[in-house]
Image (cartoon, rainbow, N blue to C red; front, side, top):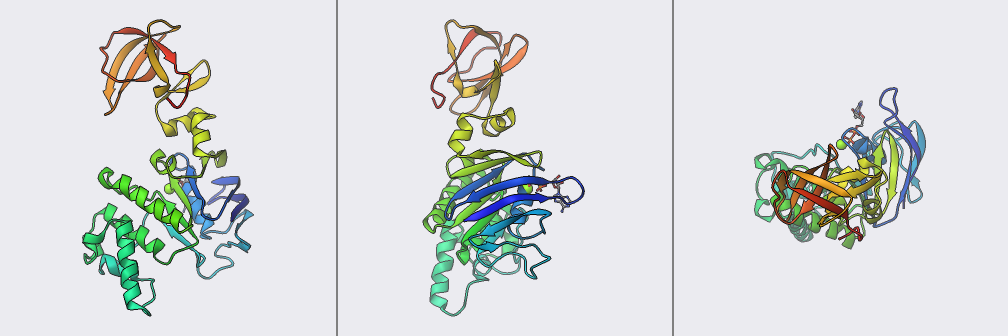
Length: 307
Ligand code: ADP
Ligand code: MG
């Protein structure tokens, strides 16, 4: 189990993280979310032992993870970290990069293993391409494959799909997270994309103002967002009578107290996001067809939140 106990850390005077505590079980998938600059990358770097803590401790099983003051080599053997800026060897091929840290003792097994990894990150056609000729997204996939090559016990991923286009993202996410679950590899992901979290994470934490403001199951945090900041991570929402209501929780009805005038419609694929005016304030709801600006209608908050 990973144990983060009351850590405090600052680069300069102001703490970037304070009183941060959480536990992650073996094989569990954990997400760290928060706005840009909220300390997600810093937290992953601390878990990896990149910096010395001002206060607190981090343990993996019974071993304390210590910073550079106590360690010559940063990063424990059993842990892999894929940074936001992945560094690869540009002048050798994709397969060679992925195999760089695998033993040459059993060449046939090494070949098989590289094939398996190329499949996980869907890079088979590029096995023999030099990394310098790859796009940003392809490089990111090589970095992911390299990190899981030696089967770490725990993997830290910093915005792991940020450079990967939408055509590939969905299937790559499924393939990588499924692989990690199958191998019982503990996974901690820093992200600002709800698609990395909702379908795949067992637990999530939300960082804000250097602290954890929410910690729980994605489903619970989604269904009961404690603050507008948390709701905004998941999608369009409104604050109605001090309650957070997602845009998809509102529906048009014949009569209600919530009388609105349509301002604008945005096509979103399987629905339209409608911006409307409610007593001089904007309100957003989802509707199956486009509505004309100026249309007066009434809204109702749906009972079942997940509908
Ligand atoms: P996130 O990953 O959530 O965007 P970071 O952990 O990168 O956030 O950064 C948290 C805060 O720490 C930011 O205010 C950032 O400017 C600052 N910071 C990050 N790295 C350094 C550094 N090496 N030296 C000084 N300040 C840093
Ligand atoms: Mg970051």
